[in-house]
Amino acid sequence: MFYPVHLNLQNRKCLVVGGGTVAERKVVAMLISGGIVTVISPDSTELLDFLAENGSIRLIRRDYKNGDTEGYFLVCAATDTTSINTDVYQEAHIMNRIALVNVVDVIPQCTFAAASVVTDGQLVLSISTSGKSPATSRRIREYFEERLNVSSLYTLGYDDEHGQRKPVSIENQRLPYPVYLLLQNRNCVVINSENMTEMEQRIHLLQRCGAHVKCLNTNSVNLEELEDAFLVISEDHTAIDNIRKNIGSYIFECLDNPAAGTHVTPKLVIDDNLIISISARTSKGLKKAERLHKSLVNQFEHRGYGKFIEFLGTLRPKVLSSLSTSKERADYFDNLIDYVGNNGTLVNTFSDRAENNKNLTDTCCLRLNHTDCTTECLFNWILQGELTKASELSECLLSK
Image (cartoon, rainbow, N blue to C red):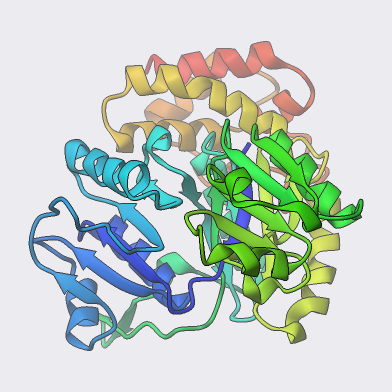
């Protein structure tokens, strides 16, 4: 399980190594959140060129070289070359002790993972399946776009004018930057003086994410106890202020003054590995966030999404070894999730659908729009404990 946080990137230096479409999406999200963005790449997309020309980003047109990551708050490696991405991670996180480093699609070389994000300008929702099912994360994001009339960050940066796709400026919307921290075996420090419910909830979440949690009293914190910390949570921001000038490689949250920290823990909806995070840009949106949170808790928690995602996650190693391209793997999971059977028949029905490409509009709803759906589909089989059927379907599709 990953730990959800919404980062404060306002006026913080961010580096993206790479200039393709994936790098472009990273840049857009950082600009919306107020980051000061530098891109290093010999090649770049039309939008990145446009943003560089109007001064929104700094674009260094060359290959990455040693020393490029020094001084940044957040670093993302998004090139097509594995060795370059690894070098970026090694220098940024291991040598320069930058806490927030992401190598696209390589979880072992990440301290955080990106999220599927939607926003209406006031509220920000992010969805994570802890890396186990990006396809499910996308389905839920698309559902939110339609139900809540919100926009995905994937749609920003271009405008269609007279049938032509043209790049447009990206404004700082002062939105948080949602990410999910990989805390397995990382050292996290909690500083408090009393048993606060809010702090206890964070401690429990840290432990669920596999972190090593050290609890310190507010009145007796010393530098040595924070030297190897990745993340610090304090009930009192002055406890951080007094020591941060001497040691500053960790990221931190202040419960009494959220604006003083590098991030906040948003309102959460959790069903095992499904995590939906909700935060408001301003105090005006807090009541709206509260209402939405209650609604989504009722819809998603203990509704089987965690079991569904866990099953899909168990398939990933075999799918990775059986299918050579990312498109093939994405298509496999899309077809698997879409499957709708007929009176419980499995192989013949599925085979006919795969070969004849029929009834593609008749796809699984994941109980997003139809909460009482009882159709024969992968989601309902897993919900009902019919794992044999689910496994047979997954094997059948993989052999096609």
